[in-house]
Length: 131
Image: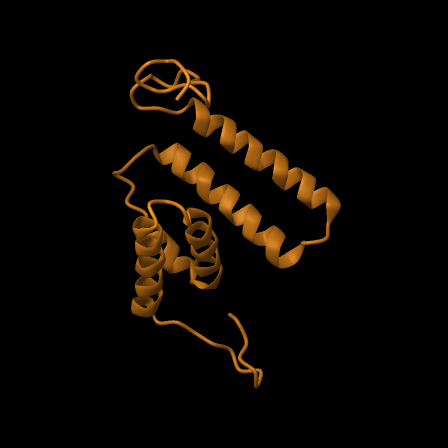
């Protein structure tokens, strides 16, 4: 948890956490995605300060691909560990970077509509041509 100026730990209730998450999502929506990077970064910060029990409760296993969700959570955990425990560890940075790339490749291949076939990043899903 972040420390206040006098050294005390700050904390958020679950409803405060959700309110901040909703606020950042609305900011992203109102900017038509222009500030999506800030939304993503804010969400990452919120994830780092939330108890693990909250994270598990937010996942709806009936939605999406459970194996992909597990992989995403694994990589988020690796990134959190890197940020908190090993920000200057060059080997850990490279290993985590490789893991992120592997997830990215998996995500680029994933699509409910194309049976998991790889789709080029710059192709439009509807035409197969440049987007």
